[in-house]
Each structure stands twice: as C-alpha cells, then as structure tokens.
Amino acid sequence: MQKGAGAGAAPPNATHGKGTSFQGRLIGLVIVTMFRLPRLLPWRARLAAADFLMAWIFAPLAGYRSRIRANLALARPDLGEAEIRRLCRRVPGNVGRFITEVTSVDDFRARVSPLPMTGKGVDTLLTALDDKRPVIMVSGHFGNFDAVRVALTHRGYAIGALYRPHDDPYVDAHYTAMLSGIAEPIFPKGRRGLGAMLKFLRQGNALAILVDQHVKDGAPLTFFGKPAATTLSASEMALKYDALLVPAYGIRRGDSFDVVIEDPIPKGTADEMMQAVNDSLEGRIRTDMDQWLWIHRRWKLAGG
Image 1 (cartoon, one colour):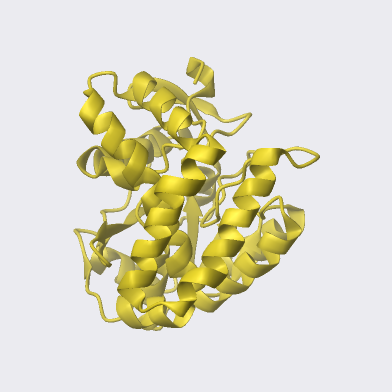
Image 2 (cartoon, rainbow, N blue to C red):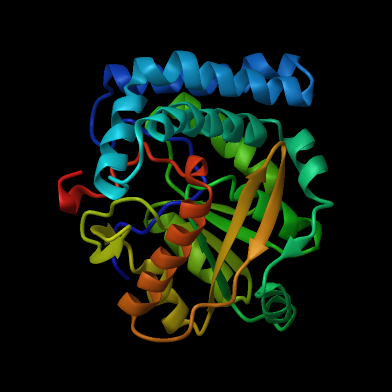
C-alpha cells in the first residue's frame, strides 16, 4: 500500500515535522478555545461565535487569508476580488463551525441523526453494508464529513475513520475523544492503526478516509486542472479487498446538512479511480466554494 495514506476528520495542523512553530501553537490555542468557550452558548449562537472567532480573529493571525488567496489564484484565477474576500471570511468560518460541531458531540448527533441520506448511491451503499461487503467512503475537508458518519451510525452501521493525529498532544487527546464520541472505531495513521483498520474493513464494514491533502509520494493526478499529489491508498484497498469506493459528503446548509452519497466509483486502475474521486470532490467544491479547506497546501506540485 502506498505510504502517506490520506487522513480523515482532523483539525488543521500547522506543522508536520519536528518542533512546533508559532503558527502551530496558535492553531492549538484556537482549537482548545473552540472546545471550551462556545459550549456555554445555545447551539446556533455557539456556531455563530465560533464562525466569528475563526474568521475575524484567529484566521488573520494564523495567516489563513494569505494561504486562501494563494490557492485561489492558482486554482480559480477567474474569481473577482469581491468573491475572494468573501471566501477569505467564509472558509475559516466553516472551520470554526466544524470544530464546534464535532466537539459538541451530543448536540451534533441529535441534530444530524434524523437527517435523510440522499443521492444516487444510497441504496447501493446500504445493500453492500447489509451484505457485509467492505465499503471505503471517500471525501475531503469539505462541509463536515462527520455528518455522514453520524447518519450511518444512527442507522446501525459501524463506520471507522482513519485520521491524522494532531501535532499538539493536548489537542490530539481532546480531539480523538470527540471523534470517538461521534462514531467508532477510529484509527490513527501509522502501522498499528493501519493493521486494525484493514482487519475492520475485511470484516465487511465501512471505512471513511479524507483524500484531499498533499501526499509526498502521491500520484500526480489533477485537481482543478492542476497537478496535485494524491494518495492512491483508498483505491488500492478497494481493488485489493473488493470494496466499494463511494464518494460521500456532509454539505452544510445553514446549521444543518445535506448528507449525500454518490454512486460508487467504477472499477479501473488505482489512478483512474482516484482521479474520479478528485473530480467528484472538485464538482462539489465548485458548487459550494466556501465549504472546502482552501488553507491546505494542496498544489505543491504546481508551486502552491
């Protein structure tokens, strides 16, 4: 299996090496603040407060706006200045709402559990899970994918999540506890977590993986028309274990979500299947530009 498998459902890391930068410490402070402060407020006010704090205070300090601008200049050079400014506010706001949602486990589950699952792939997905056929559900840092995990768990299905531990151990301890509260099991990136994850998948369960981060040894596939190093792990596992590869999205609609399950990706080569996943995610992002994490350095191959 390709190294550097895409990680799922985790707060943004500022560093991925040794040591902790000022930005890394700042982001850790942001996340812990999101854990604590907004819980004192009613649900809608809590989300609005987190949105405001991230968009207007922490994002400028962390340099998010310059990163968003750089990515948009590369991937969407057609956008006007008014839309760029809107996205510089709304993208961090979505991050704040996401963190608050997944750290308010009981409230989040109560609101998402009753939501219907829509999309052409719903029946195929549920039939596969009933038949104990492995399923790999792929998505990106878009909207809130954990809405999909809640929706499946509410219907009695187990869905595991592969995630990237946060650089800050204190933040990571809090965050993994929250992820477990939303749905279990969760598997940290690494050899031990990978072994447990594959055993779970082979037993005929669903696995969630977010595949939209730059991977050092990833395949040079395209995303928004630019080369983007993309993990092949999800498609390689789908081929090896005869698992369905299913794009799925929790698309934000105010303080609720559309839980959308697309048709499974047709079998092909690992590269072809993951290019189809990239294309699916790109289509969703183009419709709701403010819901993707434009803070990622997704296009390092293109100088981004």
